[in-house]
Amino acid sequence: MSRHFDVLIIGSGLAGQSAALRLAATKRVAVISKRSVEISASAWAQGGIAAVLDSRDSIEAHIRDTFDAGAHLNDPAATRFVVENGRRAIEWLIEQGVPFTRSADGYHLTREGGHSARRVIHVADATGSAVQQTLTQKLVAHPNITLLENHIAIDFITAEKLGMRGNRCFGAYALDTESGEVLTVGAQATLIATGGAGKVYLYTTNPDTSTGDGIAMAWRAGCRVANMEFIQFHPTCLYHPQAKSFLISEAVRGEGGILRLPDGTRFMPQHNARAELAPRDVVARAIDFEMKKRGVDCVFLDIAHKGEAFIREHFPNIHARCLELGIDITKDPIPVVPAAHYTCGGIVTDLAARTDIPGLYAAGEAACTGLHGANRLASNSLLECLVFAEAATEDILAQPGIDIPPLPRWDESRVTDADEEVVISHNWDELRRFMWDYVGIVRTTKRLRRAQHRIRLLMREIDEFYANFRVTNDLIELRNLVVTADLIVRCALQRKESRGLHFSRDYPQTAAKARRTTLSRRRRAA
Image (tube, rainbow, N blue to C red):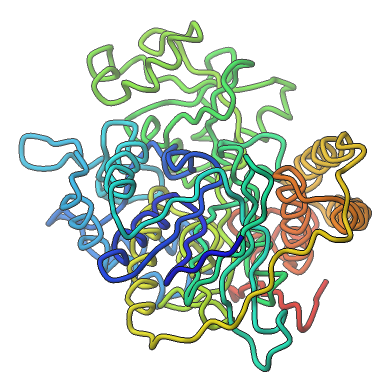
C-alpha cells in the first residue's frame, strides 16, 4: 500500500507533535507513532523546560551554564539560537493551553542541577505529560494530520536507493505492526523526531520505544552522526524491582534533596563543591564510584526534611508512585541508581534542522545540533525540541514543491516468516548487557574493544536474519540498536580524553581544545 503526504514526521514526542501542529495549517502531514501517540520520552519528562523568563536571569547566564555543563564542546551558534528563542517557545506552549504551575507573582520557576538561576518552568513534577496531553488533543482533532499509530519506520526512500542522480529523501517505508503490512509513505519533506537510544543499555529511564531508530536510519541513508559517545546517565532512577524506568526528577535535588549512603552519610560534598547541584555526569559518576567502592546496590535520595506539605505540592507524582511501592518519601529516603537517560549526540543538523540529505530533517534527541556538547544541561532537551521543530517547519514551508517519483513497494518476494524468533530476544539481551558492562559510565579502551568485537558479530547475525525473514517490530528495533551501539563505541574509541559524559580511565585528562567526534559513511573511522 502507498500513501503520499506533503510532510512525513517520524515520531510523536514534543518535536514531532509541535512540528505537525505548526505545519498543518497549510500542509497535509502524516505522523508515525510506534505505539499510541501518547507514548514518548517527552511525555515522561518530569522536571520542566529551561528558558530565560525572569528579569533576574539572562541569556548570557543560560548560555554560560549550558557551556559549563557541556564541557565547552557546545556549538556557540546553536546554543545562542536555542536560548534566545526560549521565551517564544514557552509562549507558544502557553498559547496551546499548557497549564504551567503558577506562583504568587506569575509562573513558578524551579532550579535544577547546573543552573545558576531559577529558570525551569514546569507543570508540578509531570511537565512532559501535561505538554503532551495538551498537544495530543489538538493533534488528533486536526483535519490535516493523519496519525499512523502502531507503525514503525524501517528505512528512508532516497534518490540514491532509487538509482537517481544526487540524493534526496522522498519518504520512508513503515511497518504496520498490527497487520504486518509494509506501507510506502511518500513525502516532499521528512522530519526525524524519533528520540534517543536509551534501550541500547540494560538500565534506562527511557520508554521501550527509545531504540535509536532515526539515528540508525539516517546513518544507513548516508547522513553524518556526531558525539554519540556522550550518553547521559541520569543519577537518580528509582531502584525497586517493580519500578521499571521510573525517574526521580532532577528537581528533587534542585529543591534540597540530599544523596546519602545506606548508613545515612552524605557523600556528594566530597566529590564536588556544588554537591547535589553538580551537573548530572558528575553526580552519576559519584554514585557509581560509591556503589562500586562499598559494594552496595543503590544509594538514597533524601527530601523528607522539606516536610510533607512541600513534598506533596512540588512532587505529587513522585510521592504517589513511591507510596504505591511502600516508600513514603515524606519520611523515608528514596533508593536510587544511575540509568541511561539521554543521547547527547545524533544526526548532524544545521540551524534549520536540515541533515546532509535534502528533504530530510531531524529535531529533538535524535539530532546533534551542538546545543548539548559533552553533557546536556537539565531541562534543555524539551526546549531544543521546540526550537528546532519550529526551525524545521519554517524551512520546510519555505521550500518549493517537488514532484515525487514513482516509489517502489516493499519487496517481500525473497523472504519467509522467521523460524526462530528466540534469536532476536537473545541478541537483544546480549547487546544491552555488554553495552552496560563495557560502554557505561566509566570506560576503558579494552572494554570498548570488547564491545566492538561483539557488536560486529551481532551485526552479521542480525543482517543475515534481516535479509532472509519478514520484518517485525522487534527485528527492526534490534537492527537499529546494534547500529546505534556501533556508532557509540566508534565515537568513544576516537575520543582520547575524558570530557563531560565520556570518562575513560586510559585518558583521564581533558584535552586543551574541545573537538566534535563526527562519523561519516563516506569515510569510515575507528
